Image 1: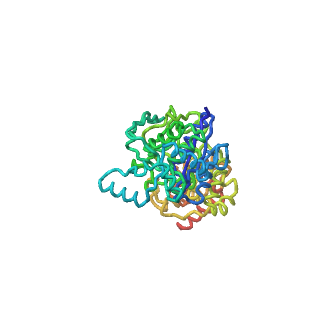
Image 2: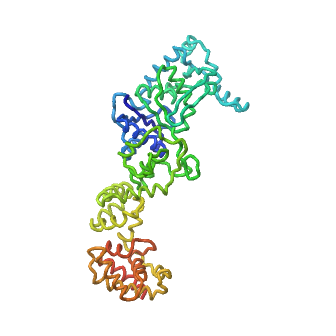
Amino acid sequence: MTVRTRFAPSPTGDVHIWSLRTALYCYLWSHHNNGKFILRIEDTDQTRLVEGSIERIIEVLTRMGVSPDEGPQHDGGYGPYIQSHRLPIYAERLHKLVEEGSAYYCFCTSERLDALRTEQEELKLPPRYDGHCRHVPLEEACERIAKWEKYTIRLKVPKWEKILFNDAIRGRIEFNSSETDDCVLMKSDGIPTYHGAVVIDDHLMEITHVMRGEEWISSIPKQVLTARALGITLPEYAHMPNILGADGKKLSKRTGDTSAEIYLEKGYLPDALLNFIALLGWHPKSDQEILTMEELIEKFDIHDIHKAGAVFDPIKLDWMNGEYIKVLSTEELHTKLSIYLHKYENEFFTTVYSKAEWSTNEKILNELKGRMKRFNEYRELTKFFYGAAQIRPDLLVNPKMKIETLEDARASLELGRTVLARTDFSSLDTIKEPIIAAISEAGKKNWQVLWPIRVALSGEEFSPGAFELAYILGKEKSIERIDRILAKLS
């Protein structure tokens, strides 16, 4: 058996984090088993379609490195892969169910159904179709259809039957058919509902495993009964736990950013984001947390997905992304950062970053590799490298650093300037050694001199160290900035 998984989003907007996790798990399980990962677009609810969504879905999957093996762009012989292009397939099979007696034509108007729902609400009964058209003879129904009377197709659900279902994550699940009403399989416009299409599609596309959120568990009886009526076997299902926000509730737009595109825009590396998402509901049988795509594919098992919800922790995501940035070579970091800046901060990229000399960018990247958590931090972290530093005498006095007065700071700056003026700037060590020696000779503590130098070079309370700043800026800029603040002090 060839393992075939499917990611079947509705084209209603952005790809959200929980959808990306579904796509990732489907990708990992299919590739773990040398199978196929399929993208199917479920657009039967035409009222919710958002223009351009299909293209955005494909783009996000491609950028994240989980491109489908089959789908709208790659026909593997099981298409069409967009449900609205498969209407004749559904019509043939669903009308056949009516002919066989497993479904029936329903002529109830929306007004009647609204009145029924209102009555049930007043009586505090669960909203459920009352089977009004269930016993209309087929011949009579066909005559009414011939007269252009609108109709839907409903599944004829057996009463008082126990439905048993085995879930790959949750084990045995039981339902009673009396809790399920005669659901609509095809709407009056000829478009199938989710339940009317999904079972047929999974069967014809030979899907072997379906992974989806736990909120879909309640739909199992309808799909079991629909599959039985059609005479087909369902794939193996795995209902995944919810992704939770910091408040312990299901992650939503109200509790945090949910769009995968937003995280790419913030500057998270796709590999790091996928690694993080993979651990939201699953974990390898070890303490390892940083995993390559190859390792994820090797270790992933659908049966090891957890039942309990997983909390989306932005702090851990920042840490993980920082770990991925650390191991990049400077050239790799430059390439990935350039792509990011070009797409999301193009003005800065074209007017600043791309115009700087490579030697400058290289030094900055080497310095920031161990500190930067996301690419959207780069511009803020480097503003004093590419532009003029603020003159901040207010930061010079620092009792913790034993700098009690501005006069103390001025004396330290003059000492530092004198040494830097005769120092070789070819490496960090050639800058560091003479300054440390001069500080010792003057009977001062290192921080009494290094703190004011750092403030003069960066104009910030928090920045890289004085030696790193001087090395990146070079001799001319370093001395110029010290001179500017000395002039301000005098």
